[in-house]
Amino acid sequence: MTTNDNCARQRSLIESQVADFKNLSATATRTARQLAALKAEPHADPATIASVQETLSAEEEQLAEMAAAGKAAVEEFQGECVGQTLPPGAAEFLLADPPTPDRRNTDGPRSTPAP
Image (cartoon, rainbow, N blue to C red; front, side, top):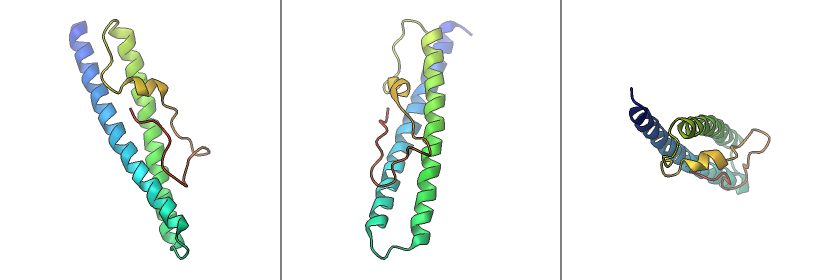
């Protein structure tokens, strides 16, 4: 496989990772808003709140894993495909500070930048 073929494959992988990350980030934002609305509701069912919190936690964990994989893919691309520009949105993987369990924002919209 030539370097250009390898770079094209890596570019395609990163583009897919960016799209997946953006989609899940939007989903997590909606989940965080749903959780905030439930918490603001005086008679919200505690089991429903717990369920939505669990969903948000799983989404944030998956986002953190996706961000780490995206960062590794971008760094590999930069090392092997010197001089080629990153796919749109890929640079965000290098800047993103993925949520961690002790830093999650469960009372409002997500603050992690989406690529």
